[in-house]
Image (cartoon, rainbow, N blue to C red; front, side):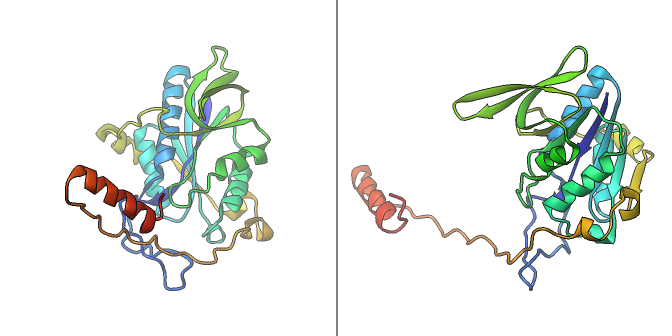
Length: 260
């Protein structure tokens, strides 16, 4: 079974983010980057499917030179090889362009299943996975929490959490699914895995190799401005007897916080 995982390298969620002077991006110097957390669930599920059905797991990522580190992390977890879409024209690709570039690159590859994280934690767009499936013309299911491969390996059954219950879908392969928290528990890379990852192939594809140019990589989304979230004010401790404190709390919620 040939499985492809689309992975994005994102700023560490614990990193302190600073807005650039032009207000249209973030300062990247000094920021540590990691594999997008939701993509880790996709990698883990791909590895479990490989352990059950055999085959190959390929991790593909679009990004600058540093994205190689994230690809190596996935290889250390157990993926077989990586593909790095890297070209100056790909820099700052918006979700729409990213999906188009991935579709172009994957159209020439052999795959049974594509896994993505449900969203990237830097832009929270939730767009690339569904747009990629549309571009490839294959069925899709998003935010899945369970995946079962059919015995004949020709379809998968997935579960999605919906309001008030769960939804069960069966998809013929090839198909694309996006992973949600709860699908599995991603493994840590072992020391042998880290050593093996250094020798695994990472194929670099530039614009010519992907088969795109000009308008193919023209941004569809313009960032007007970015601003940091307002800092949280200090909490208040309401003294006094519980009955009086509750009255004061309700007053504050109504008059100051405007929450009631």
